[in-house]
Image (cartoon, rainbow, N blue to C red; front, side, top):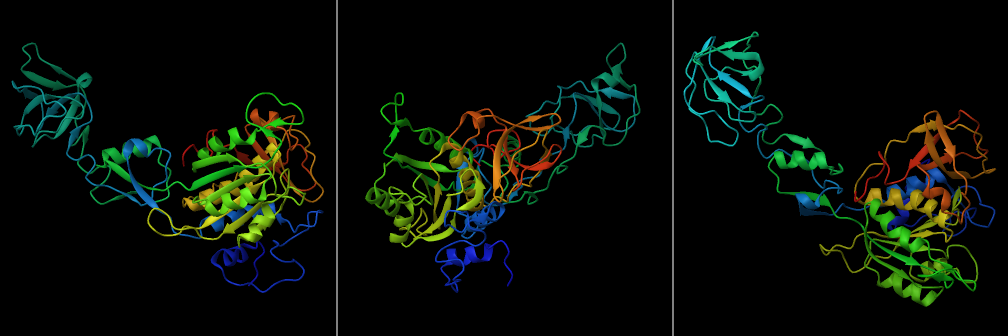
Amino acid sequence: THDPDGVEEALALVSGRTLRPDPARGPERSPEAADGGGHRAVSWHQARSIAARAGRGGPVRTQRVALDQAVGRVLGEPLTALCDLPPFDTSAMDGWAVAGPGPWTVSGGDSVLAGQSAPPPLEDGTAVRIATGARIPPEATAVIRSEHARTDAGQRLLHAERTVSQGQDIRSRGQECRLGDRLLPAACAVTPAVLGLAAAAGYDELAVVRRPRVEVLVLGDELLTAGRPHDGLIRDALGPMLGPWLGALGAEVVAARRLGDDAGALRRAVTASEAEVIITTGGTAAGPVDHVHPVLRETDATLLIDSVAVRPGHPMLLAALAASGGGPEGVSPARYLVGLPGNPLAAVSGLLTLAEPLLRGLVGLPAPAPYRTPVRVPVQGHPYDTRLVPFVHHDDGLTPVRYSGPAMLRGIAAADGLAVVPPGGARPGDELEVLELPWVPGAFSAGV
């Protein structure tokens, strides 16, 4: 069948089915145009589709957590009402519960307050003080707000200053939902509002999707973990950045280690890891200390994506790893390695291109609906690759930021997101697809 995005091919690789080789593509190479360095690069949109479908290739694993631990997680099953809401007829206002037409004789008893047991029936023609949220007395026909009623001088008769209708300001039992109603589908993000709804509907804990376990391996002999750069050594910028960023994308980062340029250490780390996703930084090209490709071959991994037609970050890759000993339920989950380039902004490009859709797929979240915004100024494009350009929002459109080279973080640190610039660039007024960062409003919020 026609598969323009190469998605079915990726799924076949993940599931272990053998594919007929295509001599034009070469072994373990993704389809589409060459990137100029010998790799067969998939398009940027194609890469994101393949990563998302790979993440959705296995069952979603769930766990039950207390409500106070569920915010930012993803519902693992539909949220179903465990009771009627409201669970009984309640007053919507502070005022008077009345029975029948007025004026009404004021009851000499205590006011009806929230949290009390069922009050006695209200006789026809009588009224009693009632608080917001209190149970409606049996036989009551309406509630009159305090500001819409007055009593006579002797406080014996209550008069309404406005027309009173049957059921006025009474929240009827089951008005919001009935026992067993489906309130939310699975795969919804658990927001504070969802927590409130779940608590109101009777929940003490929620079934949520397990966070994908991620291990970060920072590669490079030239990296320092403290102090200022010196003697050809530079600070590791990716180690401090990747853990919180992956957490914002919904991952549980179980380890973050620096290995240096050591093929044996990388191979041991990859084969011993119990994480569902391994993130490596650097080593994805074909230089003398670029060990990621050789290690993937030695460990029987399957390359799903071997470079992407995007700048910065085209040497990024995605591979399906051999299964490990099993997850918490004794079932071996799918395992993946996302190879990020070593340059910081190129690594950010790889995170948003491959890791973000992969992690969304692993927790069962659909891709967010893309949106486009006009750009205010001309944006230079690559002749045949997509460009991801940091930008800031203005009322009249996007403005690219300075300092957006592959090795720079100054621009992305001040940016609202990245604009997807098609080959050839964009002119003022052209609408560009927007990738928001996971800590800005509307993006993939922290812990999802």
